[in-house]
Image (cartoon, rainbow, N blue to C red):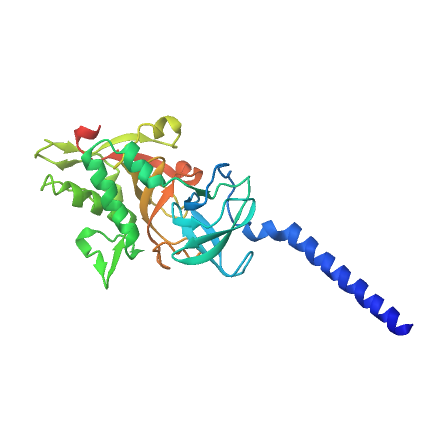
Length: 303
């Protein structure tokens, strides 16, 4: 009788423990992805090639809710291995399997390549397409952020490209434009970059001057004025005494390409190391509120 009572007690304890485990799994599972930003997933998200829609997205190694994670940049290409459903989903990235938390109230993946769309719909001239192609080429090589690094200081060392934010913007623009106008020169100095200047006195496009397209907080009306190849200037850090402390190239579709410092606390796996590097980013509210000026630096044919 005692043996039977003991077995019954053991059975009850096991049942209680299993119940607690199930409640914990159901109630706290979404918390594993709490560091992700909210949005809304497309209802027609399909399996196959997908792209991340957030500035950074968390992928989990070794199963749902694993403590081992990596973070990938905006528009990173992955494979959704099964039809989308709310909860944990399987993706393949660089040939390895990961899990990602998706719900109907979040928009982390899309089947649309944002940069390809930008290239097809927002580049209206050959020069713009050359700028986008040249800038995008640096997302496929090793890059790192280096303060005030420009094209005249040897951007490539030990197989890695080093840029400052304005150094990257001027490097890409100069490399493209100097093929067409040898005298063209865009400075990498942020203070001078913010002021209108003559970029080329003569050439196939005549005199090329930079000019301010819009300034102040970036709203929808100002967004419509931007063109691929424009240089956007920002004030992103409160503790920086400069009025402008960041520069990026506008690539259409409300996106920029930039060389930036790494995001503190995150290991970003899209070609970036601990020193940051070249990446694409959506013009989020943070960028819009930090926006100061848009400078057009391409010749009159794209204005």
